[in-house]
Image 1 (tube, rainbow, N blue to C red):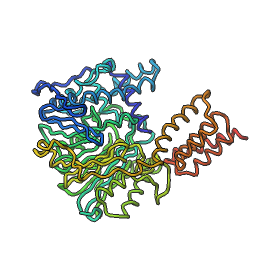
Image 2: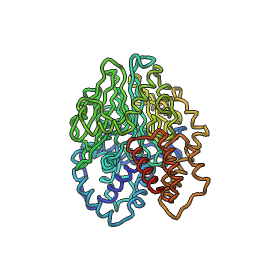
Image 3: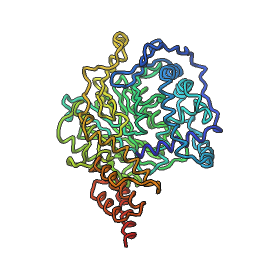
Image 4: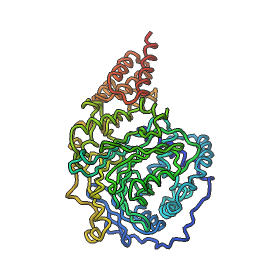
Length: 550
């Protein structure tokens, strides 16, 4: 939910402020290209030369592209045009409702023109060329907002801008790497949840990209149409990257989007030292942890970047690394913002949960999937579905499992990380074998879907999300009244989650039913509340309620 708000804010900034911004266009004359003529094989399979887009039976889109930077962009855009334009519409459709005031939109126009004025100076020229080619297939519908190239580049910073401007709480992503005595075969194994939720529509069209650039290493990435940056990925050398947001201060200007830093690592690094060197030379504008795994090193480290600091967390005398949303390296040992975040957020709780789960067994891909799908609190406590203290918060855009030494990747299918994990072998995909077989996935190694997805509890959780929006609407609108049985029904859908009682209490408080509000706030305080600020907020409401009852 928090990333949803942050992303909307970043998109508002993006959509409301570029029309009179810089007119920068990259110089692409050095690249020779062939304008793609896409061959439509069927409703879900398209091709151009040796570039392909297809949809597998798990409803994941698989894209294979190759060429120079500009050609990569054109191939990507031509093959994914309808998907990319759909994603763009999902982004921008939220803007008008979020900031309906034309006056406020005008203020934001001036702000963004200033804020993003230097972003292009911090984006590699080859990535600008790729974005330029990709942007040629963007929708004309939003040209009034910004020129296509600038729109595409700024949207790659949406995660960063939203993360920085929100400065309340960060996304609850979780990742881990284990090897030697912590895995069944001793090989390096990495898992991650990318807890990025912008609504169910946004997550429908997951895109798995297999990219064979003219320079650098071939790599795969899991994201969405229109994205050339990397949030989860692995290259043919067995380098993996995943990003976890950290606590960030608000920067003065946009610099390099973090997803383009990790893209550069995948494309140009073959070991940990080279990954560190790449990250160190880029100027970022948010705080982020980059978990890097390496087949060649049989090791994993966390690169911790921020606008004013840089650190690397390496473990000694152990063969496992956990990454949630706080920094662990010596460089941030005395960082007050980081220390406060450890104390107040849900990051430390999830870290401790990983420690608890790793005590139980040595991992293989199936057991790693079970950890990424874990919904309970410490010691198996029921903390409610959707609680950000859980490893599985039931909002993930995707989950990924990497086996770098074997060059195998498992990607989750909908919903969240509960669907079947589809296996891909990079050794085969980036070889003549795939061209001959026409297949991307190695279905013999897939991991079965979570039985929870077929349970009554999951059905209730999906209904809870809908009911929660109804409660919020009724709370905010004094003229909307819920029926007497609605709130008990709403609470029964997710009875262990503190939020259902807090929202019920707010509804009663706003309707001036203070006795009922008191009961609900007290119930909330007896549950596992996500963060210290959340708990303090419930306590403030309870105090206000008690004053009203005097």
